[in-house]
Length: 407
Image (cartoon, rainbow, N blue to C red):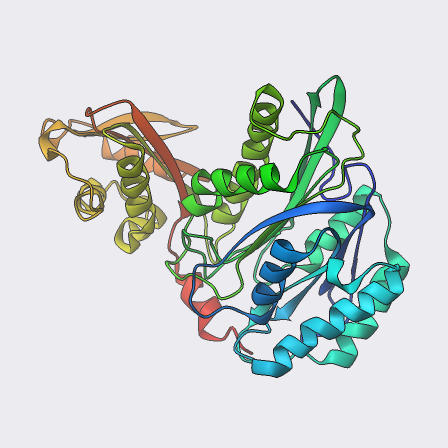
């Protein structure tokens, strides 16, 4: 597997665009298109929040019932959530407009939105935006970057990646982009993520791979403990790599799953590190757990702890907060049999073991915790299972950003 330049336009047959439509923002890109020249099988996972935005309801139906998908229209600024019939009508208008302009069935058009909940999207602006997108679409890396920028809300940077790998003697490409900075919590974090590949694979196997992958990638991140109404992860596969079709599990399927995990983990880490107001990516790795479920619960509990996140922001080696978070995770363990370490590019220190604090330098701990990527390593000494979760520190700016988000 090789990482290459680009994102959603890297795979054969995919085009993208990002334009200004003034949906809510002014003087910035706020609408994106992802388009495949050939029909695609599609798979998706969506928010677990009972309150689901109109685009989520629309996309679930399309993914489940439509024979193929060929385009995704996304906007930032307004979430089209809690908008009733008018919100669903907006989704229908988007799909109809895109279908006509792109020459594809409206049932092959997915839609996505992110932004303020409760506001109605101006349908005239979004349909005008679709006209601009259709005219601007291209298969260049620059077009993919424009699309990645257009879906940003409080994100500080666009997030995209592409890789190539071999399947049945053919070179296959997988690319992706995502947005996510706040209202992010495990069990489909608050995000939009779009993956594109020229792999030839059945819809059933594509959905199986995506559903399994998300458990250890996007579902293992958290910024603030809030699960959004709009979380959407979509993958489109158009088969243009011309590999022998993947119809069941086996070596080719495993190769694809490895590439998928690489891409989704990369994007998940980028979202966690770009959390609202964040100054550091905060990773927790649990090893030696009794079960995979325990490992996930323990890791997520630590990165979700507001007190621990605040300590990371303050570069304070307050290991008591970590042990506390492990203790209320729901996993059963012996606290005197746990080892805790801090590590980063600046080094690694043992901070807790045998039921008490270790002898370590506070100055060295502060140096380690001052790096832009910080890891807490937790060894449970109970088994062979492990898991990794990603979050960020909790800074003053998180409150500032969210205190006036609607304005």
